Image (cartoon, rainbow, N blue to C red; front, side):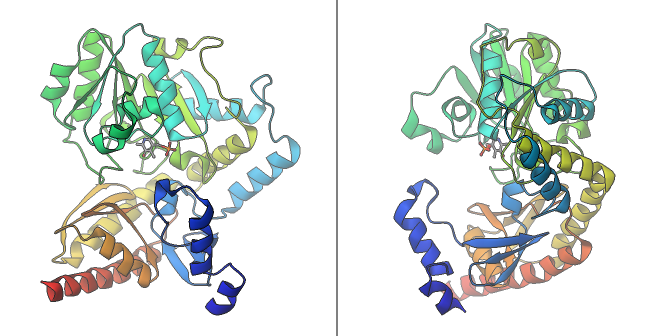
Length: 406
Ligand SMILES: *Cc1c(COP(=O)(O)O)cnc(C)c1O
């Protein structure tokens, strides 16, 4: 099978070579070509099947090829695929209404096509307050476009692109006093993740977001919560910050919202909702009805199938299972719902990732010592248990190799 596939230029190795021939190298070579997905399973170009605990990086909330998404997208593209922002499409309006309903208060929505763009809109809203200074957290990730990158607290990603739009201060994540010291009446906004996904699923101390809300309220500074990774059910709530009862001025969404289709959303409340005026911002694809129809299918399905409760239960089963392994390579399991970080004893995440893949399980080495797990929200108990068996074997193989090498 693999020889045939490679002779036609469609096997794993051949597809990888084709990729290397024409794609810019900004991602490095991806580890595997995938050709098919169904639920929580994906298949590579040679017919090997994998249990998908990457989920397109917390994007495939309903797994692959979910019938509700397939139907919604197919029907919408067959009736009205795009109108531009010169016209109104009903699914766009309905999605904005639904998102504000889930947020539980009136506001306004700007749609875009990615997480970075959702944060760019927040950046512009910040500038429109008339203040320039902004604060975000060290290690935080807010995207790669220039404004979002200025807020991203990772110097290695910023350095080649300086100068970035200013004036942004970065403070240690989770440190209330550092945040208090950085925020002044000249601060336009504070942007924070409820937990830092790309930084290795780093969870702040309890009360941190509440403190951020108090600090920003006292200086008339906008609190922007980047829920691009944590939003739309990933942590067992519609928005992760709901766990602390925190209401931000601006909330950004993307990854899980479109169920695999590209969409970003910037939700703003109160005075922040009125800052973008005609001509201030835009995007050709903003509010595209096909991606909005997909997002509506995601929200309807999460609600109708009680998926938030399921995420809490499945996440607890996964977390407990990982702890019960008692594996010597696992230092800590952290995160919320179905966004978990397995912290390893040493920089072995890439090796665990490969060993898991060899056993038919896809995970993500998000940092050198952390494995991120973000399976589809619909993952079953049985799939969690299957994952745990394979993951234990992957850990043991990695430990064995590390001991042999030592
Ligand atoms: C992924 C991510 C982004 C960037 O989203 P893109 O769609 O890749 O631009 C921003 N913030 C957070 C918290 C993310 O996880």
